[in-house]
Amino acid sequence: MAETPAVEMKKTLGLTGLTSNAMALIAPGAFLWLTFFIQATTGVTGPSMWMGVIAALLLCLSTAVCYAEMAKLYPGTGSSYYFAEQAFLSRERSWKYARISKFIVGWASHLYYWIYPGVMVGTMGIVIGYLAGTLDPSFMSASNPGILFMMGVAVVFAFAVAYIAYRGANASTGVNLGINVIQIVALMIFSVMALGYRMNHPTGSVAYQFDSTSGEAYSYEFKTTTATVGGVAAGTIVRDASGVPLPELDAAGKPVPYHISYPEKDASGNFLSHPSAKSVVSPHHISWVFIQATVAILILVGFESVTSMGGEAKNAKRDIPIAVITSLLLQGVVFYCFEYFCANYFLNSGYTMQSASGSAAPIGDMMVVVGDAVFGPGHGRIFMLAEAFTVVLALIGTTLSCMNTGARVTYAMGKDQEVSGRFGSLHKKTLTPHQAVWTMALISAIVGCIAVSLVFCDGGAPAASAIAALPHGLLSSFGYFSHDRMAALPNSLLTVTLASNFGTFVLYALSCTLCMVAYHKHPKFSFVRHMAIPIFGLCANLACMAFYLVGPFMGYGTKMEPLLALAIAAIWAIFGAFHFLTSSKRAGKSALIEARPARP
Image (cartoon, rainbow, N blue to C red; front, side):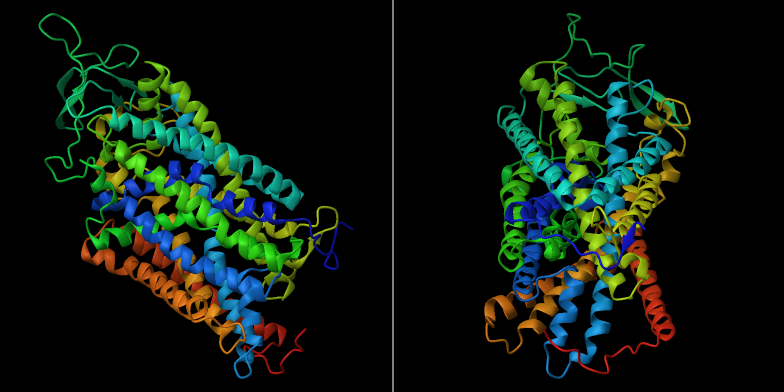
């Protein structure tokens, strides 16, 4: 027999292993590449991208303190789900609400933990599609990869990562530790190069402009002509037989050099670039900051993942609180703030925010430009491919870490018979919650396919000329419609990202509340750590959730995606209530605990 509920997890993780698992989920390598693209498609709010990251960081830091404080009291497997039960059981009057509170927390966490890996596997599909198009433009467009191709990659990646998770925490930790070092070094190198590019190319100097069709950067002005595409007259770049843009020639027959500038907006009012460093770090509009924060939260979540590994920690009470705070400070404060500043400061007339919103990998495009500038023409692509390899590694690490966390929360609910009991068993050899792991693999594959199905719709809809230039084939052009039709549809990647993030905000708001409950009248109560900080975190999470509804009606950011994300969350909540009531009735359980369990 391959499994038995009696098998227990082994305590193998020290502080380094716990911190590495959390840092892998926050992965700055994966998320600078991924989330910059998503944030670029959020309408007019692009100028506030850096401040959105700061707002999300403050929210996460306040929530991280709550997790760290609860981990000191309740080291165990299940994260917030376990905390919810223990916090209420410790109360003299409200202990009877322990079951319903932990179910609400556990169910809400699944909106985050079951969708988030799907976002990651969808992103892997986009990254591999971008790389395939870069290596062979005749097969696929790098800026707009084939939908079916990306879906295929997402499915394979979901089950490959699930296999690593199935093998156990030690295998996962070793992978994550190596990935953390590689991705951090690689992205810091790019960030320094991007900063240097901006500083060494003042307005009017000769620089590079990026061409999305050929996937290369050129230091000359492109020759253009007027052509009719889809019944609309538009300026079109003249290209040679291999797709390379031809240069505009001067009177002497020489290519006209490209001179860089830093325009803030175009004639239609669309944001293009930051005219100064001050513009990068300015909020511009407080509502834009909140909209950006609702997406930016994706890059910072994960610090809480180690609280689900209490059953595998050697010294849970000491190491888990340290790992929670350390992982967030290192990744969020030290790396993300710098990387996001450099990427935003880099934007220029040769590669604008509008260019970023229409590309599958704007950070990859930027790497081509700065690589050509530093290593010489034609070498930018090689630099980008080397950096992209580290992004692939980072995606493996972050998906693996989230699967590990989500599977352990599902495992804890399975042990309590709040979901199917099969989820509450461990594999006899690997000692992992394998049923939960493989279920998450299937869900991740499905969500990943949905995420890439309409990834270039709404604000990221490609121009008619770009659609016409796509290589024809089932794997390269299927799923692309007219520009107008794609612009009218919601962006699927942004939608599932916002749905996952909404689950995050709900979970974090509940966790801040639990911290206050856990330490109410506790001998170690601290007003700052157990009241002021949790209240700030609770309010910040509620404010971000409110903008899902307020933002669209006030005209901030995109409209369709936040409302669709709210609909997904509402359906999940209704299904959860139905499941709780029906399963309780079948099992003969009461929603409220009738007899207080003995405290250990």
